[in-house]
Image (cartoon, rainbow, N blue to C red):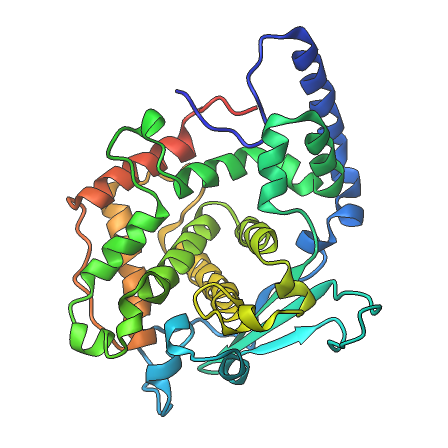
Length: 348
């Protein structure tokens, strides 16, 4: 099967083959210095604190602002400014932001969100980005840079390739009807059957509303269930670092702050939702006994997605039509997951 790989480029030239053998040998040594060069992914704990197992829908919220923020999950379209966001989540930078241009830039940011007595905390630090991995696909020097800057990425390159394929529509590998995480999120939006409750705020029906929240949380849940919370967090972090390094430094232009669609409001909300998605993924991993050898049948996937929708019902007080095993998006994505997770796809 033809595949897209992040770290390997097929070549018939002997020099390229020799180089790859050297690279594989060096990669095998990377385990000895992961702790030294990969602090961003391995030395900081991203976790759910003050936690007992979430009982979705079991608590009657008395919060007066439940419509605005939801419980656990957030909708960026219900937040009208960066200042309002900071009343909902806590953003903590390495050091206070100053106007002094000679001051060193912040190297990390912590984002906290409390809901129903539980708190998620995410730490985003400087490090390897999504763009760095794409460059490493096609060039020798970027590969060495990734090797020494992010040995974790090299060690888990096969899993990262699998996540990449689940995240992208790849018709030449999976057929013209291929679907990805984003298509699952779109199907969830279509499943909403209480539009009078769900779309009181018209912005919630845009791409940055429910669709964005469902996409981030469902993808992070599935990656956590199939692989690990650590890998899900790594994937989330390299994405955010690539597009918005200002999230770490805390230095935004007025235009960025005012941009609710693509500025810090949107991206800090994504960071929070990624964490809640990981927490759900851990619970569903246990519930269904999911591991790398799990046979992703349409029945299993439909049940998994319906559990995700149950959470969203609790978080946003809205209703959903359930997924069915015979739904096209369920059948196609279940087949893709089975292929990606269990087949030998020829990764290097």
